[in-house]
Amino acid sequence: MEFFDIIEEIVDDDLLFILKYGLLISNFITIFILLYFKSKKQQNEKEEKKSVLLVTAHPDDEAMFFLPTITYLNDNNYEVHLICLSNGNANKIGKIREVELEKCCKYLKINKLTIINDKDLQDSMSVMWLIEKIQKIVEEYIDENNIKGVITFDKKGISGHLNHIACYKAISSMKRTEGLKVFVLETTNILRKYSSILDFFVSSILNDNLMVNLNILKAWRSMKIHHSQFVWYRKLFVVFSRYAYINTLIKI
Image 1 (cartoon, rainbow, N blue to C red):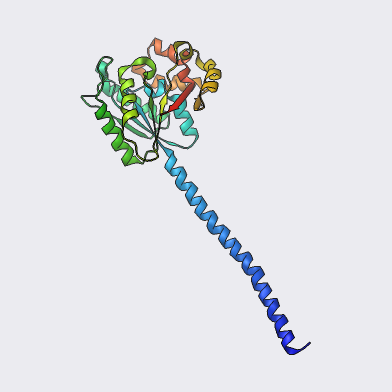
Image 2 (cartoon, rainbow, N blue to C red; image 1 turned 60 degrees about the vertical axis):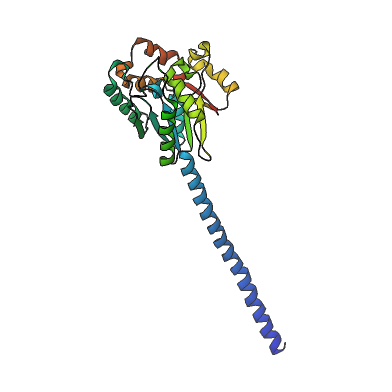
């Protein structure tokens, strides 16, 4: 073998070594970079979808009507924000009900609570709230807290309460930021409303956005915290109402 052939063979072997292991190392580096940016993207996506705002009318609405939804959100690592648009001062015990709501939110792991006490948004079964005022409150909160989803009552307000219906009217017609999702809690007929967990079978067929709470003690304890409101018919409501066990949400 001539001298130049030996040199060429050595050089070829070295090039082959460099190419082989160089490509292997570069592949590892590329995969690492891709995985890093993918994890950052997924982390950002999770952060973006975590903040959900629940808009209610009175202290105890969250426990009476939205408990399955709150349970679902907590179990799936969403950060739950709650705006209660009044302090429930119809019987002049608004301050007491504020304290009860704060305790209930702590029990339900809702760390972001805002209670509104405005002269135009007072607890009333006969006065329709100012829609524009509700929208201003909610829209500002959404912008300031990077909210990606809003949940409130539907157009029938579950119980037909005017304050509940005002929540729907305001949220359904307000300006939405890009990507904001809005859901409303479905009102059912009276037979389904008081069929407790048995309504699961009908709800699972009719609605894909189904949230379930199987812990009756959680429903009882959360309502019991609202001691000023926990009269006999609300105790019956906790036992027999589907809303203690089941929520179905409708996207609007």
